[in-house]
Length: 277
Ligand code: SAM
Image (cartoon, rainbow, N blue to C red; front, side, top):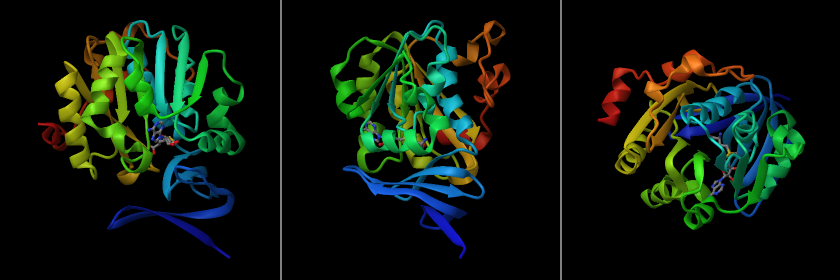
């Protein structure tokens, strides 16, 4: 029998993929969790029916959310990842030689355990308990409210703004992120699709740019996510990714990110520039 799975991305649009096998299906205190083996995307993590990551294209998302802010900062030592329970972002963060400590605060311990078992390529740094990694199972909102002047880079690798991730898209949260960063700190958050989530992007842009003197939006193609075009919003207190001298960058072992992408991802088509005005 053929098995197909659909993520309803909007009320008028779904992404359907043929499933070979359901590897895991369960429920935590926060969400429904599944890992399925699909024909097109390979193994995929699905939370509350929403595709989170896949073996096929995870490298684009994780490299772009981690390396763009980390290369923009001249000397990132203390890094925080909020969410990112599959481990992909932290796997990229620990590649940076300057990073001494990478704290990851994920609210759902079951996402971490399931990812370690079924997505070992992504969860690598959590499986080996990488010496730079400090993994905490806690609410990122609570963690950020308690910290001041501490992190060089904060990466918000969150799910959609519903359920436990809702508070991660509020002005109050961005204010606490600003407070938790050092005087030249940088923050980045995944902000969904510029084709589909216009309102969310505008709201995040307004809030972030009211707190950070340098606010930039950048793009990456991610076939698994709605419309295949994903964006990230970066807020910086001092360092501007647009004036970075990429000639001095030492490239890491990556599949998507490189010196050219570090700059070109900030080139925005007119319709996105218009969204931000
Ligand atoms: N790359 C994915 C995407 O864009 O869909 C996100 C992946 S990652 C699995 C998202 C994680 O954020 C989930 O594991 C979820 O449990 C976590 N999360 C949601 N709200 C959180 C919060 N308040 N504090 C910490 N982690 C949170």
